Length: 172
Image (cartoon, rainbow, N blue to C red; front, side, top):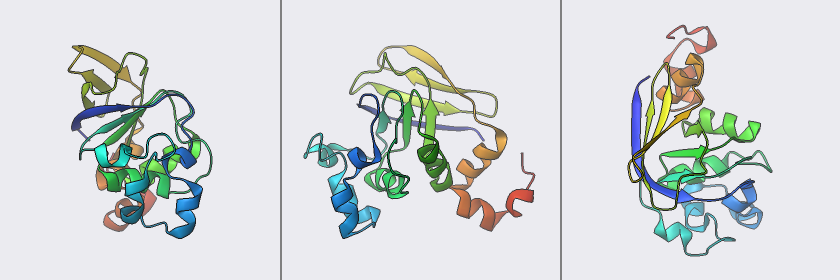
């Protein structure tokens, strides 16, 4: 897999919970990400969802996606137009849900990234880099095992299993 995504950094802090991404009260009404995308991060800023531009890159600190394991916390970000989430680390369930749904998770030191910085994420078989175009800085990120890259490249686990030979697939 060799892939690059570019977008504007949308910055959050540490311990962004799935309930912060999309409120539990909203999930009681529907889990359709296309309906819910208008309400992402509403507890932080009710106008945030309307400010998202397709391709934006969500940037956060430690423990991104802590809280419930509902997939909609991933799919709602995809529906809103985010191309990737860059964080210092992810909760285990959020990381798996991101990979399973084809949302690019990137782990690196995000402390120098500021709101609005123009970023490019370069994903390759051997390395992952976050290029902060605004600051002219390159951040080395955690490289993912080939089988996770294959799932991401397929657009998620369902596509990977449908288009290949399941987990016996040896495209790596």
